[in-house]
Length: 443
Image (cartoon, rainbow, N blue to C red; front, side):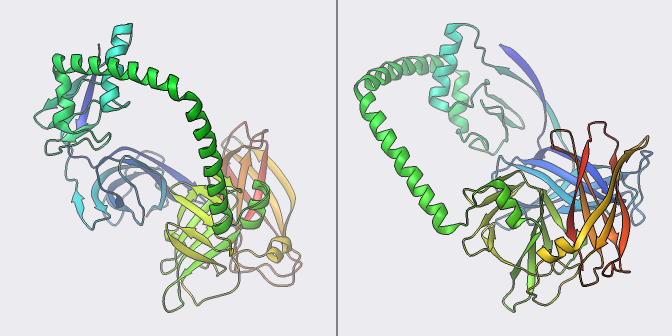
């Protein structure tokens, strides 16, 4: 049997915490991911953070090297992962952060503090599968306890490790990962119990083989009918409640650069969702741009009218509005930096996209950066201010390698017929062959 030595933080509520810092126009953003270890759904996490500059010196924030980072308004169920939550950082010189959980909030209104890690070292044995007899033993165990069981369970002073490998605190009567009861899983420490599982497995295997021979034709027919019926019901459900599209390209064309707004009972905007070419942004209208939460789009599903973006599933309703986490957002509204009254103008209209055109494009590199230079021209009939552009840097196959954004126009505005030059740069990468520019924001 193979032996694994595991070091366990018995006080932790989350695990596998990863961090990175992305910088856009000298504005750093922390990107944090983690796993939920506990039974309840996490709605917010507060981290104690330390930021470091490019020279690995701690950055002082408000007179202290420690500062708080809060991820909120999320829904991270047990045994799932929070992927790439973006949080603005308080100092522009921060280029790396280290974080430790400080407090975790749950959907039942409770919260738990994390004051200090307490680490325990435990040896865990795994079931071997080298011989036919060893494979039979493991199959017999998994037949009763589930396919996730691959280890000998261990009980120690601070808790117990289940056969699936998950650590559980002393007071836990069932595994938080696979759901097996503690008293049942610990019976795998008894050789006689394992022999009884093997005997039961042999009986079940023989009975199943005999039953399969008698019912094979019936099961094939029922399965075929069930598949056809399920597909038909699913299709009717999608068509009846969601807006579908003939292709992914058409869906992107119809939805990208569009704003959707959720209004409160007084008709004021409370939350907004912006769908870009490859990102979805959520904005709290009373906080403004500095608190935007952004998720990369993982997939476009035109046949179901669904966009998967990190922790969000965006469903396009047949009336043109969208639904996210059970909330309905109406199409339209101004994606402004502060809250305002209800507006019928969209975030990026077709006329704005056609009026602001890119010319004189060049892509060059120096010793540190790959740089896109372009000229933005206003061919429309109105003046545009605070024009925000995004660059997607791609390889020869058209895959996006890196992105960044910039303000091509500020408060001075770009009047009809005027042009202005701009630059967008990312870390130098020899695979970059081209850059695609999209319009993110304007006033």
